[in-house]
Image 1: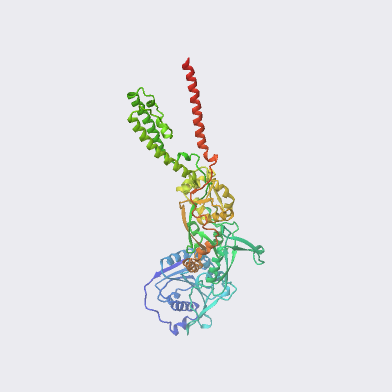
Image 2: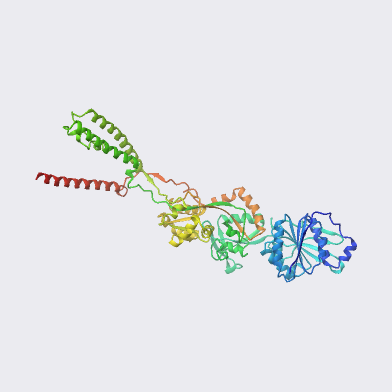
Length: 629
């Protein structure tokens, strides 16, 4: 059973240095030397008022807490040597760390098994973050602490080696550099003795990740994409005798970070060739999985920041914000075959026909009543003839009211026909480019189009995790065979289907821009457009392990890179013809002869009219023959 003693006290007067008599009494126990040296390390580091979390074995006496100074609070945890209950201790210690403003974790142990178990549980339980200081106190030589080496290298920590033999208490303070090999000698920072106290050579706690003191080689996960190509070069030291080398603007970004932090890097591709996501079974794939399993120190990507990925890894400061849009094809500009009806709106056509029949009916009624002997006044087709710009004869006996009505009708139809002619000429010279898919709703409601999403990417994760709304409708469309997932490299194979509007791609605007510019560079045409709706917007950043000290170190360089505009400059400079198809018009004016394919509707109207006229002629002949009998 874990024996936990948790108590806090407010600031009290600083304990004086132990007297010589007390030191002689306690010199036989290395615990006393450990406690005194820890107290002086805290004082020299201006951490005397930090909250302490002390984790020891049950074999230690409680007298060690007497020498810890005037801390704001102390949480003392004692656990058996076998470490079976260490998980509970780390969980409770983390609660204290979260509730405290400044924390120093002190681990006192003389057993490698206990220290190894603590190192494993502290990382899995996320007890140690960069803001938390760690002091490991032991009598073991540094070269015998290999299980603890990685924890000391990746945390803001000190190794305090105490020597209490021969009646003399002394200690040396050392630090492990980031990514240092266990076989390398640790860095000496200070020494402590009973008589002379703490002798400093360098600051005890410093930001060792701000710039590595010696060149370090990091493993960077990277995969080829629409803007980055990979070439395998011979390397006897690499697995398989080859290592990947990428060409693209991300190389410039990697060089910028490497120069700022003083590291070299080696690329490593994910076996599955995807960016990465967290699956429903809890496994993590792609480059995200490489970082999660610590097969790589970091990954560039950049990666869309979402909750599912954040459960496995940590993100840097966002370097760019990207929008998800519909990417669809622009059909060839065409003239509408029924365009001859477009110069006048439907209501205008209806009102013209209504007035035509109304005036003809009124004219027929009045002419029959006041001029029954005038055959010209009974011509009901006079108004139609005027509208069709044909001559009309009233004769010498026409009434003035007939002349006025026909004159007003002639004036109105003249303005109407002139307007129709002008608009029709404009419409025949203007070609319309159809862009039917502006929103995700437009795509979902069209059963004839197939949606293509980024395979194993953040957008796919959003679709698969959705339980309601438009994204859930997209998810359900997979049952109808309307949803498919491809990598950006596979987008090139379906461009013709996109132009024919059989498929649409729903992905980040940067990927859509690359597809457009590459297609324009090959063909000189702009056959694609991006929908007006922003389906989702995601910040993108680089990734590393949870609580990795690389994250704050990279954030400083990323912020300066963004503020200077370097990232956007490198990204745009790497894209040829990036602005060629940015604002393509939806209407274009052309000067060319009309083809039968563009005028077939007018031909249909003419053929129908001629057939009606022929049928009327036959009917009149038949009626004339019948009436003649």
